[in-house]
Image (cartoon, rainbow, N blue to C red; front, side, top):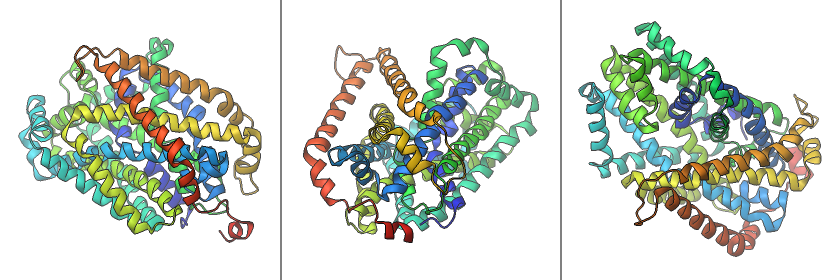
Length: 497
């Protein structure tokens, strides 16, 4: 069990906070109308993320099982495969996310060792990045293995080890980001203030663009890990008297607070150190890896004390990636433990699988990008599955039985039911449709002659999804359902917890 609510909340915030909070959120906000984007982003925190987190916390606390057992016990035996889908998608994301975490560790070393001082413009940092990614594949693999090993060692220690790690990592992460946020205002207050304007002041014309709202929704959905199985997994170790609604609010608000701090730090640095506003906008539009490992690296190299600031920034990114990788491995480990495996054995097998299956992403950015779309979109489907389970159980009964309990600190009204029952399916359809539409606009060449890359990516997504769903639904469903221990807990066991 978690020793305290603080430990639980820091752990769930850690699972939610990842590299996307640091390199994706500032870019999306600045490119989509600043304050206009923020309006939608905050709205969808309450219209997507927090309602789903409530559902997940309630399911995990009720069943005391991981995603597979939870889906079996809440939706019925024939729906066990949905829990397997959630595990698989989370681990599949971990295949390439470990590679990304390795990048952040490597660049922490680049800053700490002083190599960053050799790359004071974007041409030099582009060369530094290309030499690493394309010229040293074994080095990429080495840092990927370091990322998997560190994450596995923490999960190996169980919930107590995960809790201890997050109670250290999250305060350190926030502290590092605060330092990175303040420093640009010391160097160039007016330039840093320009970054603030791009982040917070609404550009009202964007408020009436559908893409702004969709971007805000996708950022909120991915950033909080709502519907991904994280909250189900950690709620297994939630104390009996913990309030589900309050914990969901704290997790969502905590994650968004980290995003805001990171946004100010990143955009403040970019505009404080760029010669012109146009140069700053060019950096913002460079994509996640280009923004972080090319433009920001060059800015750190050119600023006074940049070696130290670069080390602090990339260490913060490494911590953000680590807390998410811990959750990824724990989601899978929890389900193997439910099937009777020893935790140490389960963690070893999972880490070996993550390391081996991540090798194609380590060797090829094109493969990594493909898998990011395939399984990143799959995470949205996992969120839909959680909502389906709630609706199948009955949204009114679910709210009354599992959320508004005698231990609740916050009473949740019928608005939650309307979001799950009506708003969420519409939001899912809009986001999923937008992903497909956006990908179809990619007219670059695919590995298959005569086919656009967008169509190729969508076809690979459909192909992989069909294989996984067919295996889980028709072959493994009954086998795995039999292996998961019995649940829910008896009254006596629940009272003891």
